[in-house]
Image (cartoon, rainbow, N blue to C red; front, side, top):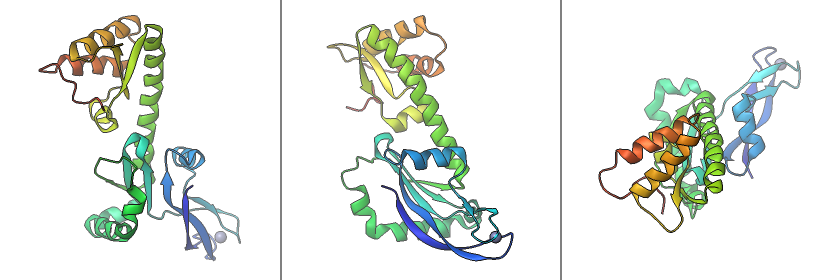
Length: 214
Ligand SMILES: [Zn+2]
């Protein structure tokens, strides 16, 4: 469940002040409807109760997706001018609830500090493209009888590779992973992130695969 807070908003069209609900915490892995609102740009749109005009109003919120190892403090774009002050304030506000929010969530990456909904939306869009490509690759891998190993999401974003890695059953080595990835890419060269996975595996120095989550 998303967590909400009430904030006072002044309508820029008619000057009316009204209370509105805002999400203060959004769970990206659970609140699918809210995530869609972020992606469609409707997340921070309100309707003035007096003049019924659309009002855009941003309030800071926390976006968490433990499954994708994503934790972001999302602040209004206008806060960027006083970045340090707001980052310190966000950290102080969340300090008392941090333990309960993050306990057992499996988040390992450092939090992101984003200014404006656009910065979050572009990251989520990028993840969605990566998910789609990963699904196509996984479908092909299963047809070949390959296993799929989870890639550390932070590394997947950094290296721009799929969220999983194909591997022959019973094996775990860079050479075996490379052969599996190359085999799949030979069958479908319309998967740019699979190509980058091949390149990342080729670039390895020994037989370990640092970006696989074990
Ligand atoms: Zn109004």
